[in-house]
Structure formats: structure tokens, C-alpha cells
Image: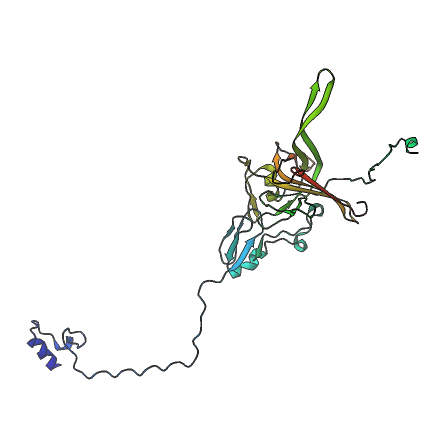
Length: 128
Length: 209
């Protein structure tokens, strides 16, 4: 440390630096003369095969509106609102919302038979 | 001898003892769906409807007083010396009328009322009535099965129609709401072959034909 202070004084540093403040790594223009640090041991190559990970894009289920109107579905578990502007429109739906949306469909067993021989189920949205 | 019974001589084509009772089923579909169910069939006739996701077929449920009529412009060729020598007729359109008492869902009724596009958001269904879009055309299909065992039927397909005339919704005490004044004009569809511009009628009856 005293050698370093001496070097600083010889180079024209005006203000003497207190010994306690001198840290070899912080002083400019002072080359470290300490022994070179040993190189870190090379990391061993892993023998396991590298995992191929899929894209981290969110998984969605494609669902298509079968209803000839502007169809808005609210109250889904994910909190999202789905707006099918017209029949045939396909939207990506959060997987946790699929069953909720499908429960909107009306089948004959749960909702009875249509009028006057019209025994047709009413499908609002289907999975594509 | 045929003359003794009052029947004419020669080739005679007689009618069948088939009498049809009641209204046909009524379906309609957006005219923008280009294809009929048979588009055409093997004999060159365009008839029936085929629903798609984008262009579904709407099925009407409960209706009354279904009627079909011709609308013509008729002018006689009159020679004052002797009378009418001929008649010039021009088919303007064919009219299909009925009154509807099943009004829901609004999706099926809005086109009849010439209302706006419907928004469905459970438990709501909403529509408006504003300006009429005169570019809305529809195809109609009216089959009547007159023998449910043999599946004999006759059907009427209107290729290009519009809902016209002012409708009325009667709200009578003790009675159902009734949407009356519904008239469909079967307009000329010049994409159809000659002889089918307005309507195509087909009949299926293996036992008689």
C-alpha cells in the first residue's frame, strides 16, 4: 500500500489520498501489479440434451360463432369479454373459458324442444 | 264411347286425387349465400336451402294465414271493332304472405321487421328499428310434406325476395301477440335460368310420378 501511495505522489496527484481510501481497483492509471488471478475452471459441458422449449405465447383455443348476430359473452372465469361480431367469426379463447362458453349452447335435453316440430338445438359457439 | 260420358276424344291428362292441407314449413336465408341446396340438380333446377355458419337458414315456427299469389300487369289488346284480341301480361312479382306469432329469438324476427342487426349478450337480446336497408334480399323455401309416411312433398323456393309492406303487431287481451302484414315479394332473379327467375316448385311423389 505504501508503495502505491508513493507512486501516486510521483505522478503528480495533488491531494494525498488517505491510505484507507486507496483501493487498487478504484484508482485510475494505477496498474495492478498483484499476481494474476487464476482463471476459473472451465465449466463442464452438460451431457444432457438441451431441452427444446416451445414459444412462450399463451395457449388459446379457437372458437367460432354459429350465431347470426353480434354475440357478446361476459362472465367467463378468466374475466375476459369475448365479442363475436357476426356468425363465422373465430376468436382465440382462454382454455379456462372454453367450458363456460360451451355451456351457453342450448341442447334439446336441457332446454326442451322447439316450437311446432322445430326440434333443433341452439349452438352459439363451437370449438374449431 | 267417350262422348257419352262428356269426355273429349284423344289424349287426356287427368289430375290426381291428392289434396294438400295446411301451411308449409317456412325457411329463409340471406341471399348473399350463393348456393341453393341443389344448385342446380341433375335436371337444371335450383331449389332448396343449405345453411352455413355465415349464412344460416332461419326456421319460422308458428304462423297462420299463409298464402301465395301472383302479381301481374295485364293489358288487353283491344280492337274496338271486335273486342279484346289478346292480352299482354307481365309478371311483376309473386307475393307470399303470412302472420307470425312466434317472435323469438329476435335474430329470426329482425329481418322480417326490417330491424337492425341483433346483439346477443346473455341474458339479453337487443335490436333496433331504424332506416330500412333496401339492399337486403333473402331466399325462401317452403316445403309441404303431404304424405309423412311416403315422404311425398311439394316445395316452393323463392330465389330473391324482400320483406315488404308495413307490418303490424297486434297485442290483444287474451290472445297471443301476432305479427301481421308480412309480405315477401319474390323478385326476378336474373341469375336464374329462363323459366325459374322468380320461383322454383318441385314435387316428389314416387307412387304417383
